[in-house]
Length: 329
Length: 265
Ligand SMILES: Nc1ncnc2c1ncn2[C@@H]1O[C@H](COP(=O)(O)OP(=O)(O)OP(=O)(O)O)[C@@H](O)[C@H]1O
Ligand SMILES: [Mg+2]
Image (cartoon, rainbow over all chains, first blue to last red; front, top):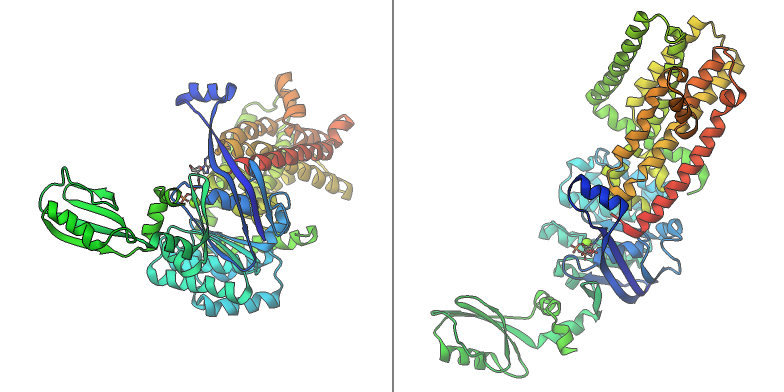
């Protein structure tokens, strides 16, 4: 359904010296720095999947989405979406996809939601009967009814996102790209949005590609994740696998009475963070145990407090971002 | 989207735009009033100058008014239907809003233009119309069907000349974000075309005929309407000039879009 082969994007950022002289110089002798935002990324996404695309700020998520949606032309490699080149066959591709950019709205600021949706519907040539059916469907699934007469400018962030999703799905696209759909939302609204995404995926078989910094989104929605770091795809596989692979790790944190200088780290454990009087260690459960690690520390220094953390996804991802995946792979 | 459906889509955009404007009625009135006042000030200047010097290099006040009125009319067409070209850089490219146009199944240029009908242009249109009417009456121009058709074609061609020039220059937004200074340099040349080109040094006349051809939107059709001797290519050249200019502008636009595809915002 979506196929990326060695997808690469290099941005050229013009170097500009400050001031008029710099501007004039740049005009005659343009120089620029190249920035490889996405490098040799390959993956294939099947119909009906919900795939989480994660990575730290600036990793290249949005750039990849822009290439998949046809906004940007790849510098190298290829994208195929439903068998088409999304940039060259921009219009045909546009009919089959929906895109949410969580950071900005596609609706008209001053228009009531109903009018905005009518415009979007007409842009996608959705016929009246289908439009009415979808509006009443969304009235239920997105609790849209009370929002219809309200202009976007008067909506809360959560209401805006619900409106945005309705606008994105009003032509029933086969694929939706959601670039940070839960950004800035409270827990309750997030839950609703997740439930909605799950629902359209199950009921209509819509394929979903989702980028997020909220691992709750991933845990709740995605069976498969792609992890991108510095433009390079470092993981493509099931969520379960990474959880298991990193599940053998535990994190233990000590708060000590005296400074930590010259402390021996017990075997089988690594330092995650070391402050003045706090120490976080990560240990492999199959090689050592919590009691052995803490006993070793306690024999060296007085421990005021200690906490043990179960591995959650955020810990797992932190490790992967820090290069943990390469170590263990 | 099929070409046939574009007019009705434009109409929908326009209706909703008017709905918004009605909501901000104060803004609407202020906008309309201020354009009329700006126009009034411009005209007053002409009036004062003309009353001091009863004829401008041999041109009478009604003759100058006809030229002034014609360019005001074509400018108002650009103002009403293509004002959004000015804000392409600031409001669409810089903010990333242009990305939205790229993922919708309509032409991005259509979408940009349809997004904001500019009502301020209506004031200009009315002023231009009144000026032409007054000037024509004073000059004894008779509105036969032939003259009406000629006049309409000239005003429309003039509007297209304005739009094409703005389109060409606004494309720079895809490179430098803020395209307003570039657009302004070319656009402001129309000031010359408010008066008979014959009063200027030769270079300016040539510039406004062959490079930035606003002369075809005012001076040339005006001399023809006044019944002065006008070479055929000047009297009837406007539609051709407009068509060529528009074709070039669209090519430049497509070139800009390709660049956008490789850089984004
Ligand atoms: N239009 C552009 N021109 C130049 N560089 C760009 C452009 N867009 C993005 N970049 C750079 O490319 C890299 C990847 O950016 P991208 O927006 O794809 O990251 P991201 O993973 O979406 O980050 P975030 O989580 O912050 O949204 C960054 O270093 C960014 O600065
Ligand atoms: Mg991003």
